[in-house]
Amino acid sequence: MEVQNIRIDLISPSPLNPRKTFDETALQELASNIEKQGLLQPITVRVAKSEDVTDLETGNVTAIPCLYEIVCGERRFRAVSLLKAKEDEENIAKIKAHRKKSEKFQTISCIVREMTDDEAFEAMITENLQRKDVDPIEEAFAFAQLTEKGRSLEDIALKFGKSARFVFDRIKLNGLIPELKERVRNGDIPLSGAMILSKLDEETQKEFNEEEDEQCTVAMIRDYVSNSFLELDKADWIKEDADNWENGEFKKCSQCESNTCNHGCLFYEMNNKNARCINATCFDKKRLAYVIQKILLESENLVKVGEPLSFGKTVIVAKADSYWSDERKAQYESVLEAVKQLGFEVVNPDEVFRYSCYYGADDERILKMLDEGEVYRCISFFGHYKPEFDIKFYYTRKELVSSTSAVADPKELEREKINAQLARNKEIVIEKSAEEMRKWAQEKPYYQREGELSSNEQLVLDVVILSSCNSDFLKTLKLSKWDKKSDFVNYIKNNQADRLQWYRAFISECLSSNNVNFYPYLQECQKILFAEQYPDDYTALTKKFADSYSKKEMKLKKRLEELNNDNAEEA
Image (spheres, rainbow, N blue to C red):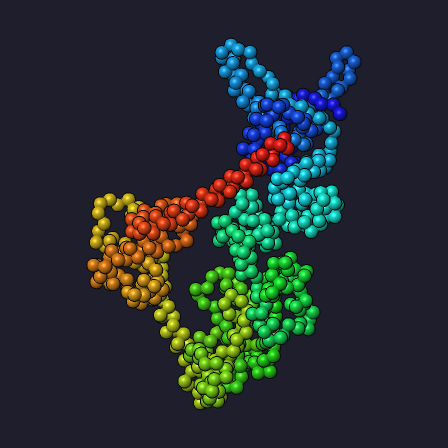
């Protein structure tokens, strides 16, 4: 095996290398050892690029290597490169001082081998995965790459002395989004917690990363993941022992691999007490199928399409509210379409009945009102963001009580509809005016106005501040930001002496919000305010966390020193 000295500037790291992170402190220590003892072990390279050179006498063409790629030893190469950079700086100084320059670290000892991409990649992985300090994320990437190249879990496990389950879990870890991978490297997320998160889909991982942006424990991650699952004991078809699906489209939840209580589920080891479903698509389909099944059980008594509403019958009711989000409206429309396919009449209760009655089906008052035609039995199929079967009762219009028909006079319906449209017309004028002036606030250069605030500007500022205060504080003033009847403007006009009180309530609301976890300027404001207002509590808090930080810092530095010593010995 021939060892060659090759110029460092002709060698480059391989893009195939799964190892992407190198501890800078450890590299500096390795460079220091190499400077004292020399490079004890050559690196391994392969020819990455060559140039054809023609012999002018014989005409023979020879391929001469002009660029090399590292197969094994990138850490040693980086350490020697640091020494070369240091030497180059010293040589510049020597040249300026007219002294002889050194070229001790301009080359590096190499073993040159002919290797294919696959052979080189496997050699890189083998070297990296045999390290004591192997990065689990890089290990995950390496195993995933090997499986993509056709290696079985059993082969990989045998080669690296691991179990097939260990290799499988590491490959799942490769499914983490980049942000979570970085947090695993930084120590913000423990490895066992990362294994749980890796089983979630990309969207849920992103939600976790945004919501839980501080250092996490495994317990915190378990709680978060558990809450994101669908609790089977709360599913209507489970509570009513109706988890039997004649068409064969679904398995029983008790037999499904998506049930966290079953061995086949990825999360069995995490939670084998409370059954949860991890397959949201299947769970949602069962929700709808259950609602359809319940409606069909009522089919004999349901009003069919085109039939008039008559007392003693049941009708399906449905309406979409204007305040719903686009997502909720889309879900509602999807369920509505499925229900309409059944062939039953679906009516908007606001157009047919007076208003909803909130007595339960087994309430004696409901039974009496049904007999007297005061209420009408209805079925609702959509709850809060999901299909949901529910029996409801609506008060019939007064003119229908003595009739056998539950359908109102068309003229009366039209009259009520027109009155509703007139009321809505007024609302539209207000909404459109507000929208136009909202654009003014965005586009007009009002904020450039100079001078003191006018009395109206001060009034508007106070309204904005007061309406942003905590709801509990507003209740003490008999105000609510959600109640359209709350007149903030008149309250402020009549209570100018209390202005400092709601200013302080506003400050308290700002410094108690989640924003303080993200914005350093708010954290600084907390320190300024509470150091002044509660000096003893602030001093005690500062000492408490300073002591805690100091202990943790000493422990981490000690461990870092141990790792650095191990690296120095290996080198």
